[in-house]
Image (cartoon, rainbow, N blue to C red):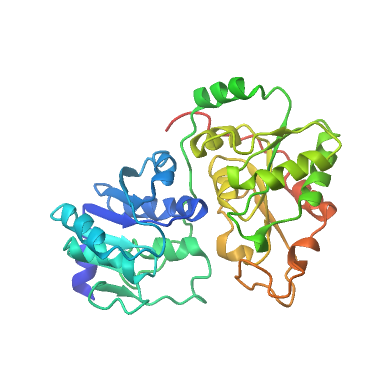
Length: 354
């Protein structure tokens, strides 16, 4: 154990096999910052799907991104070996955030001396710096990420550094001009997307009521989401009796970072945009269904949440096994409005590149 501790402290070239989800990728920035705190000379590269590269470029701790061409669940043994061989003699340590046998193959093929990860899927040999995950001691996903960046059995810092993304005001201005919107009135952004997980989808009719409430009180309402979220976004704009700027499917992930930084308040499902909003300094209310807030709530003094906390929660499932989704439908618009009211007025923004 002591031998590994010394090696980890001395590590300078670190390759992180990052998450595939936007929200998890934002939370992983706390890991990158922790690595830098322990060794300011460390160079951090991240292996991630191509759609996350623009997000990773907004993290000053990350030097380079490496494209992962294999889809989720795809074995691709020959391709993993090819990637691993291409990475040989470049890194001192690999940190594997996913508890997957397949992901651990690449750093093994790369012959990276220290391969750090949690126990899972019979990865003995592939992982030689094996960590035991105690979910009771580390209920938050961000804690688990950060722990892998420290020597084994090292206590977590009392205050984990929250994610902070670089914002580009010039890009925000260009996007607003292109989309025909402005920031002259206070902005509330709604993020109703869920990455195809109905158990995280607050009803569209509730989002519409929320939009009406704040639209009638002087806010302009923007809706952000990907092309996959267009149906629910259309439902909201159709149901609400106020003008709404529906930007769903009209922005890139990189553009969404800069547009979110313009908002005074953001209400979001438990999704990647919730994490981005917190990481650019917005006041955020996250709506949780199948997962508990303590697991994935962003670290910020300006984040609150709504959660029904029913007897069947959390179930961690993509769909409700009972078919009623009460954990979401029972969260009323008025309850969310009350939580938004707890935020007060917060106007800090990440308005310039770091």
